[in-house]
Amino acid sequence: MGLTKRGRKCRTKMKKTTMAKRVEIARKRKGLSQWELSQLAGLDPSTVHKIETRNSDRVFGTTIIKLAKALEVDAMWLMTGNRP
Image 1 (cartoon, rainbow, N blue to C red):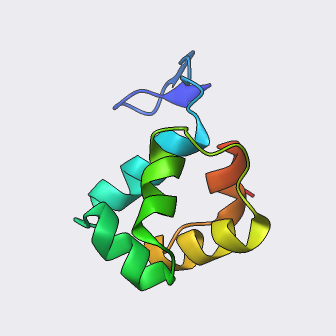
Image 2: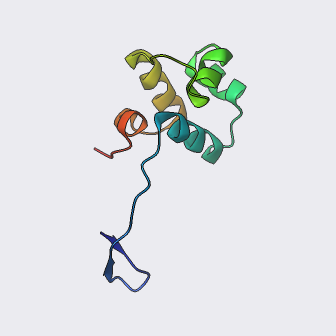
């Protein structure tokens, strides 16, 4: 349940996003390009591109932690979409 502008409870459907989409959203909120994010996170630019386009078979935990730190978001949110 969410809240309306007047503080009343309302049912909202939270659209489940993919990790790829969450990385892209967080990156754009910070005003970063994929290349800039890769530099901040200490990753190869192709890694960020593969993650955002879902062309990566798996993403290692260390990569998620590096992205989370660079994007200043929670790593659990990046992985699952849930806030701790």
